[in-house]
Amino acid sequence: MHIEISTDRNISGSDRLIGHAKGIIQHALIHFSGQITRVEVHLSDANGAKAGQYDKHCMIEVRLEGRQPTAVTHVAATLDQAVKGAAGKLKRSLKSTLGRLQDEK
Image (cartoon, helix red, strand yellow):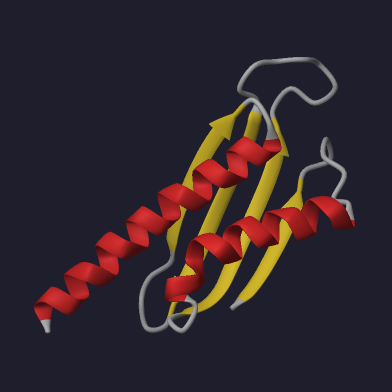
C-alpha cells in the first residue's frame, strides 16, 4: 500500500508529521492493505497563521483494485484529530463497500 501525503502552504510537511500520519492511516487500513493500491492524503489549514477552531482539514482518497476511488474528509481542531477522524471514516466506508461486494458473491 503506497501512501502519499501532501500539505498546503500553511502546514510544514515535516518528516515527523508525515510519519505520524502514515502510521495512523496504515493502522486504520491494515485489514484492506491487500486490496488498496494507493492512498493519497491532503492536509490543509484553512486559517493559516490565524487561530481558529476546527480549521484543520484532512482528505484521504483510496484507490482499490478494479474500483473507483473512495474519498473522505474530516475537519478538526488539530491535524492529529483530522487525520484520525478521516482514517476512521475511511475504514468504515471501505468495510461497508467491501462487505457489499462479498454479499454479492
